[in-house]
Amino acid sequence: MIRSAWLAGTLAALAAGGVGYVAGQGTPTVPAFVERVRSELVPGLVDDVRERVAGWLPAVSGHAATSVPAPKKAAGPVLYYRDPDGKPVYSASLMATGDGREFRAVRAGEDVGFDVPDEGDAMPSAMSGHGMAQGEAAKPAGGARMILYYRNPMGLPDTSPVPKKDSMGMDYIPVYAGEDEGGNVVTVSPGKVQRTGVRTEVAERRVVAQPVRVPGTVALDERRVTVIATRSDAYVDHVENVTTGDRVRKGQALVHVYSPEINAAAAQLIANPGFDGARRRLQNLNVSETVIDEMERTRKVPMAVTWSSPRDGLVLQRTAIEGMKAAAGDTLFRIGDVSTMWVLADVPERDLASVRVGQAATVRLRSSPGRTFSGKVAVIYPQVNPDTRATRVRIELPNPDGTLLPDMYADVEIATGDAKPVMAVPDDAVIDTGERQVVLLDRGEGRFEPKEVKVGVRGEGYIEVREGVAAGDRVVTAANFLIDAESNLKAALQSLAAPKDAKDDRQASNAGGKP
Image (tube, rainbow, N blue to C red; front, side, top):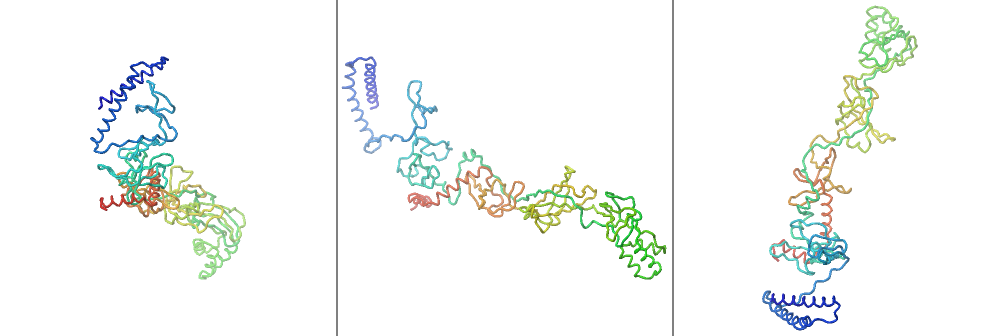
């Protein structure tokens, strides 16, 4: 049969070639041998081949011979042209091979897939150039995976129990058993995981702190400032060699003043040593105990009374001038203790909720680059500045060497958050939609499950997770938006009513093939 078919084809080709040769020579007649082959030999051989093939098919397949319909011509515009022998040669316009054969046109619906399938991935018929016949049942053959249903290739909420094409001629994508797991688990092939750059990290307990960085100003501790003043009218008799900026010690003489009222009380004390009222009067005039004891010992009234520094500190202000008259209450000196200083920082209203009393704070002076001072938040002032929408926070710092000076500028960093470790994941792992927060858990073997979580504080690239994640869970930190989009698509498809055939097949698969 094969030899007859070959002979028939050869003779037909000779006949056609002879006719073509004659036509090319312009001869109006056809040679006799060509005419005889075409009219006598070829029809007989063709009939013989047809009879032999008709008898051979039932013997091989065991079925009656049936006519094979001609393949339908692909519809749609031409996408590109490819080599007629299947070689990896393509062209955007019509071209021919070296031997003059034209390239084959590839139309829409024949080859519209651009993704390279991985080993084990389902290859849509649109990508392979051929697919299942319309209406073919999705049944496993020889251990092949069972097809549950077909989904729209463009992600539209449309499924089908049998193969079909969309309006653009693209084949629907089969969904196999095992890919359609319960819940929202998404299965991604290892090749796609590698191509999309999926990365994961283990969730663990750690300290999460988001520092609040604000500017501040160094100020004196209001509790450590003292004013030197008389409580009666007086005249400045003499001022010691002390001026603004000098450091003084407790008990060091500052100024000598003459006050008639003080002298009258002193004379009464000397005249009546046992009279307690005279001593009390001198105390009320702010005369120091040292000066009163000296009056009682010498039994003399001094012309001028000495005023001394009540504490160690810095001379912040000097207004005393020799010979001047000072009214009662006038400030002669102002002394400040700078061993402990304040830093006043303005925290914006949006960050105020994370700042608490007792939190550690780090202060850096612009005048001392590289040096830091450590303190704690002592007070959060109970009002918000209406102009800056900020609240003042006070930090107390020790200043043993006097580096901190009043009105210096400083950069303040307050360590917010809890010092105890909390469950945390990287910031990149959390997908925040505004209404909810989701992470993708890596379940292994290319399976990923979206999980809604409740988050807390953020800091240093991590975010606290209060619910939804346990220690040891692997969360996706890169390409999670792509996986989440596929999960949303799957959820949309599952929300639709599955076709009846697909439901029956799925139930049969879950029951192990039992009805």
